[in-house]
Length: 387
Picture 1 (tube, rainbow, N blue to C red):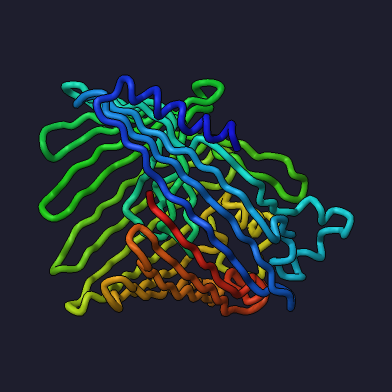
Picture 2: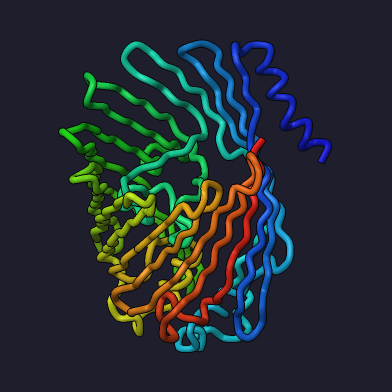
């Protein structure tokens, strides 16, 4: 712990000597998750400390960093096969079940650390930084850097090592270039994006090349292939309703090429109630849940793929019950296997800079479907203290 404190404070003290303005802030986030699985109620709790550091050296140069320290307690090792239907797990000998575990280990890591410089014709950002792409809420077809949890899609995304160049073209247009280096040029990620605006809409066109790594979970051999993505997105407003869309064509080196698309709409009523819906389609997904195999399930659970099925629908409603209390509910409907996930939520600003969040998760579906009841019904309680 002493080394951790020194590690957190030393950069701050050093930057104070050179920066015109330095800020140190962050949050502490304890949470506990519990759910019923095979007639047993399991619990996993965690404590997360996030330190954010920002220093402005001038109007044209700044530094930012985030450090996360996370501890896990309770049920910290899960057997992934416990969540799968018997029709899939019967293929795995009992002697090999130990290979399919999902451990939660204590972590301390530098999530972001970057230098941002503004020049006359461009902005340059170097280092580990957040890369957020796409207009979608629950799914982002054009974002191949991050995977969202559809039950909690707004949770912060991790940083990625990259060089980013933003070039404005007049007042309405901008070019974005991102290079994320790996061991050689071929394996490194390359991105180019053109952003523009037309009346009440913003839009973008994007092209990305990156390696995609996933595993054959029958042999545990990695499958590494080149992935080329071509797509775009738009977001705007018509008659007071927000509308957005996103589409991506994925040209694969080994596996079959596929399309991803998202279309969404939202509206805020006079009462303050917010309503949103989103439709997601992935042509690499399957339409018959009886054909979901071990690779489909484990890749989905381990976030190697966004989905296991082809078509899904997301609905969300939120209402400000009081000035300090928001209640809401998400419903995710799998159109192919007809399973449903219901996620009620409550966010309470209990004190200044202290928020409490409660999620429930209830699965309704036949055994073998994406949101089958054997996936574990339960909930999560999370506090966040900002400083």
